[in-house]
Image (cartoon, rainbow, N blue to C red; front, side, top):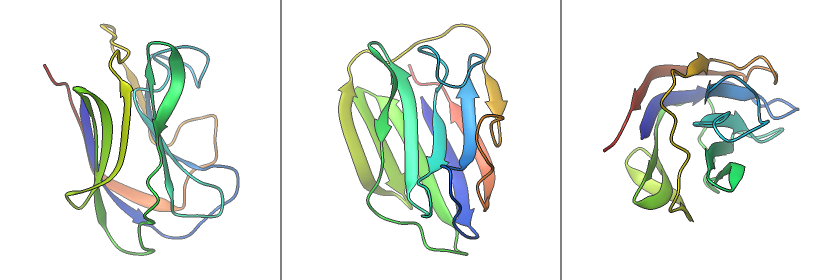
Length: 134
């Protein structure tokens, strides 16, 4: 799958605030609860990107690059070909090779922006798009 969005952080917050989460219904109890989910690291604009895979309900990739405050960053999260890749404005900023067996679900997903389990991130997101890949 690919998930893309435009992210504009307005500040930082404690507690791992959430931007959005695609889920089969739960926070992080089982595989399928994060397909994907995106949070901010506490006190930072650093993204915490998570998507379950076989053997791990909470794997992911956390780019080292920090999106700048009050500026748009186009983010693409792609899980395909055994990898999770995160792109900022077309540049690959994070790669995980742990996705040989990503979680595949056939049921509808719930989409939260922001999820009910974490505080909301002080940010705007726009143009949130989910695209299944073959």
